[in-house]
Structures are given as C-alpha cells and as structure tokens.
Length: 175
Image 1 (cartoon, one colour):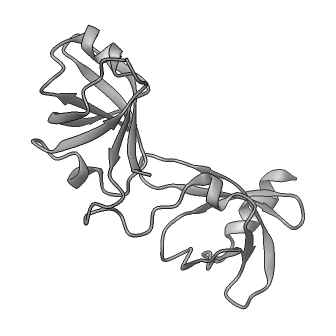
Image 2 (image 1 turned 30 degrees about the vertical axis):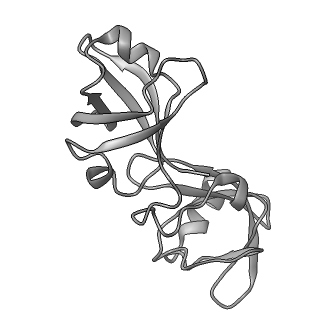
C-alpha cells in the first residue's frame, strides 16, 4: 500500500493547473518543483504512472499544482480523482502516517489515562488535520492532529494533551 500525499481535484484555469487536497504535513518538500510523484488512477484512464511537478502555489488556501506532462485544461481534467502517492517502501515515506479508517473508533484519553471520548472522524485541513472527537457528554470537538497535542497513537487509543479550555469551547457552542 502506498502513502497518499494528495488527491487531485478540479482544473483551475486553462494552463493545466489543478487543485489538490493535501494528505501530507510537508507539501513544500513533497511537491517541490522538479519532483517526480507517483500516481494512482483508475485503470485505463490514461493517467501517467508518474508526474513531474512544474509549479506550485497557494490560492485562497488551496494548493494548485501544474505538471510538465499536462499542458492544458483538458489534460488537467483527465487527472481528476488521481492520487499522488509515495510508495510505502520508500525511505522518505512519512514515519507516522495514519488513515481515517485506522483512527475512527479509537478511545481518546487524557495524559492521566481518563477516557474523554471516541474518535469519530478525521478532517484533512490545508494547514493541519483535525481529529473529530465525540466527547463522553455527546459534544463533538475538533483536536488538531499534531504531535504536541496528540503525543500518542496506540492500537486501541490515542492520548491527547489539549490546551486548557479547548473542549469547553465546543461545549459552550453546543448550548
């Protein structure tokens, strides 16, 4: 299985630029100009097995990429839904890559071991991902999925060390 770095969305403009939904914490390095990125696409789609990054930019918080192999909007349209991947065996693969299906259902505990709730989802964000946590009292909270706040991801639980008042904000909003 490969590590998904991003998923290509819709074309942007006429010159082959595409939007991407990021699944990496380091897009600047992963999509540096000149980087060759492997692809996963539907069989028979005609999508090349690898694409060379020609340019990157962020427009209104959305990452936009162009590839040397894709000269225009028609080519960009053919890429829609393609996953940009890093082979799992590659030495530069992200050490701690977690998939939503691996996280949903895990118990959430604080640093003292007290049960706080259960993970109900993972939201991929432009700056960072967020765990969707269903707290014990039924309130839904969002926890930045960064090492400082989520120091441990174990087989059956995660440990969170949230900033003071984080969960109170969601409880107040639910009232």
